[in-house]
Picture 1 (tube, helix red, strand yellow):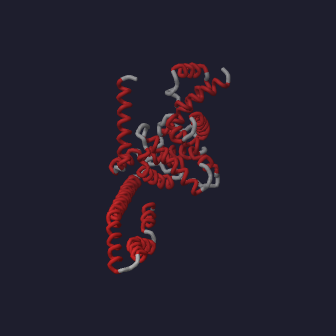
Picture 2 (cartoon, each protein chain N blue to C red; picture 1 turned 30 degrees about the horizontal axis):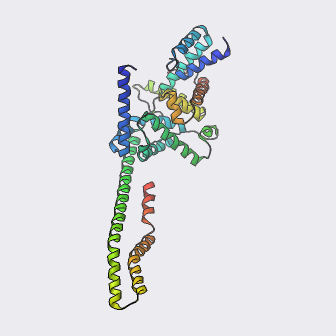
Picture 3 (cartoon, rainbow over the protein chains, first blue to last red; picture 1 turned 180 degrees about the vertical axis):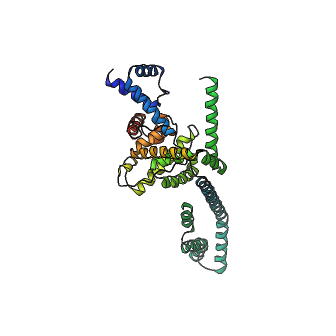
Length: 162
Length: 199
């Protein structure tokens, strides 16, 4: 027997856990034949078998409190994720609604401002500027309020991550 | 493939598919069940991977949070345990990199690091058996913490968690040849440390 044959046999033993499962029929036959002949490899197989049985015999269990704590934390986090998703839906629906109403109302408001401008006898650039301020003012106001509040979405995200 | 094997494979596929569907829905009842089902295996894997019971318990919780967040990434075609261990492993590496910017492979080379003994929970009928098994478990745990993390991981996944070599390669992302080499070397390193240990 060469050293390579011994090493090959030991590798098979280590990888398959002695029982040879996972080896082909030919490899199993070769291994068993070698173990019948080689005392040292047989000792190695016995030692490996003992070692693997020892490893498998170590009990290690999670404490019930840890499991309960984890389950509670996962449920809480799932609820936060659900709320976050619902909030995103609400923001999306609100954006769609605002876009739709703006598309419908802006042409009407434009005509109203034109009529008011003609009725008041002001020039075109004046009532057009007034219209621009009327349209942009709410968005500017909301932006300033959000900035003053310190971007509430960031706060939510921070809480969400913790 | 015979009928019994086909039935078994189909049964396993339907179970993993059901898990994948539940994870996509973020079904809390399914997650409760999975946490209970895999509690011991996951904690044992994390404990041996980190060498610290407390860190392992933290990572245990983080792993399930990650499973909740990224459950849609599980395809249901492979064993859930393989995917779960893979998630846990990535979290473990991230955690250790934050604490100590070295790779997982080098973590246990630091001999100055006082390792907390692993804390096996034993269920035994008599006091004498409790002492004997506790000593036995401590000896094995001490031996496992003495070998490099990558060898320990391969040994634990193969012989404690019962994963196949392909599954271990999938969890660790290492080539099959590397896994075989780690197992062989890991066992050979453990053997002198556990000489005389009886199951």
